[in-house]
Amino acid sequence: MTDAPRPKIVSGAKPESGHYEEFLAHAAHFLYRAYQECGELAEFDLYGQKHILIASPDAQEAVYRAPDAVLSASAPYQYMVPVFGEGIQYGAPLEIERQQVKIFSNALRPAKMKGYAQVIAQEVEEFIADWGDEGEKDFHDTYKDLVLRTSTHCLMGGDFRRRLTDEFGALFHDLEESISPEAVIDAHSEEEAFKRRDRARAKLQTLLMKAVEERRAGARPEIPDMLETFLEARYADGTPLADELIPGMIVWIMFGGFHTSSNTAAWASVELARHPEYQKEVIAEVDRIYRKGEDLSLASLREMPVLEGFVSETLRLHPPLCTLMRQVMQPFAYKGYDFPIGTNIVISPYVSHRIPEVFPDPERFDPHRPEPDHVFALIPFGGGKRKCVGNSFAFLQVKSILTALLSRYELSLVDPPETYREVMPSLILRPSAPCKLRYTRREKA
Image (cartoon, rainbow, N blue to C red; front, side):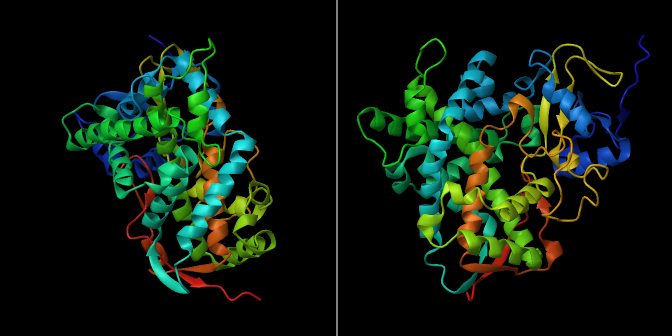
């Protein structure tokens, strides 16, 4: 017997399913209730699988600094393997995955990002060119369309982007729909969502392999894209990245950036419309920096602290990813608590960003909120060595979109402020539908 303390157990568990039904209904809201009831450590059950929510900067640091051999990121995310493919990220040995992350990092170096900024600016300019003087749009759906264009252009080049059809977005939608609480329990069940996922992944493999073959045959992009990086990539032993794995690499980074950028841009637009006083501040900064499309450069986007703070506060209140998990593979302890092998540890940015001792008055949207002292307090993209490698690209997309939009238009709400709610049709937090906003051409001095 051990005298080590145990985390408090969340109330409301059912005999067989535990807390699954409440988790399924809205994972973020369930986890927040767990924190409010139990504090820093909260134990809950999903069909017999023990999970422990941890919610404090110190606890998050302990988890993110633990070696992979002790706390595995791969084990609890095996439901992502059918999405990305065998041999990619969680479907690859740890050492190979680390090298694949390094390949991604090479695709996001400053020189490359400069080219991506030009591409994104061009896409945004073309996208909003025919909006007219005023109108109403569902900004969540609108941004999904726009981000699909900007992401595929940066990833795959202009030729692929110009051939883009609605099918490509629909295929990614089918992948996203499969990232659900059901997948955490059994990602290989006979659920129709998983059948659509597998069909979509097979179709994407065919479409993307064709692009790889065309590039190998000599087609060159106007601006160096991520596909070029993958084609030139080498593992540490000099072996090239196999062509058949490149579609999986594209799906990996596309999937990670697609919902992050589109959802964050949508939430940022809602908050701009909710807070016209802050919108005026952002617009004033936009006018100082931005003159016309070609001026929307990586350098100018780095000189926008007001917009940076606005996007950061958006990510604090509305983090797209609400459940970041690790599985205990070797004995792990924190503050005297022993975590049994096989336990899934859950970190929730949604919960962590609402700890009042860290973020005073946490439900209040404040783009001037000072950064917390603890480096592991604000974690919309995770933390430590496994922090999302694509976060800089997501930030670039969101800032580019908002800068171009606000240089022309003001945003206002169509519906009452409280009707723009947080929903989770999958494990990804997004605004409720329809996310309608009104845009009105600005009268510039």
